[in-house]
Length: 224
Image (cartoon, rainbow, N blue to C red; front, side):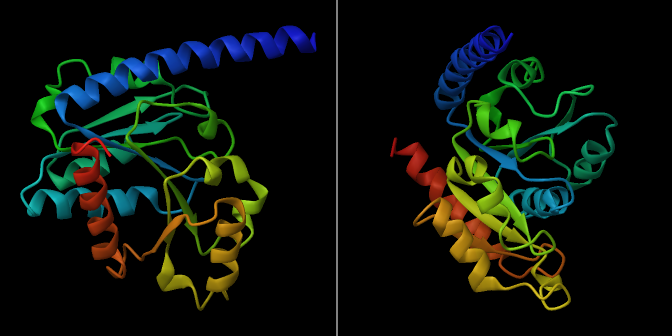
């Protein structure tokens, strides 16, 4: 049975990669910078994204978001408070987003109307690393509550990331978070990885995060 399972998985990934390539072409043609946010559950993705959407909108940008969860539209309703277009993707038991899910939820959106699109992936550190969504940038989050060695335990995700955002820094002291150990763990998996330390609750590091997004979008627009 093993060879058949492996062949099926390879076929699914190949189909996903082909569609992701088409999506990437659509995003590039529209000048849309797409960010795939990936992490385990409870790292603070939604709060970080809510603050990000609000800040970008207030600065005159045009962001939008797709939110992935197994069930409920709770996060989409929460993010909609930012006043930007948000759509929920319910996977109904699938532990990750796939390119066809993203494609289906773009119906009716004029992609040229947006500067940034954020995809909040399902909370999962395994399957999400294998599925390309056509994104321009993949960001892996790491919360201070998770332990400094999380990147070593789940290397494929952090190795595939363009940057890592450390979240909930306001809880670092209470969690006895070892900042240098966490950075060393990230660099062991991905040497030179861009690391941004944040607390969406207090605002710490948010400007650095926004600067990173603007910088990456400018490089993307130049084809770099």
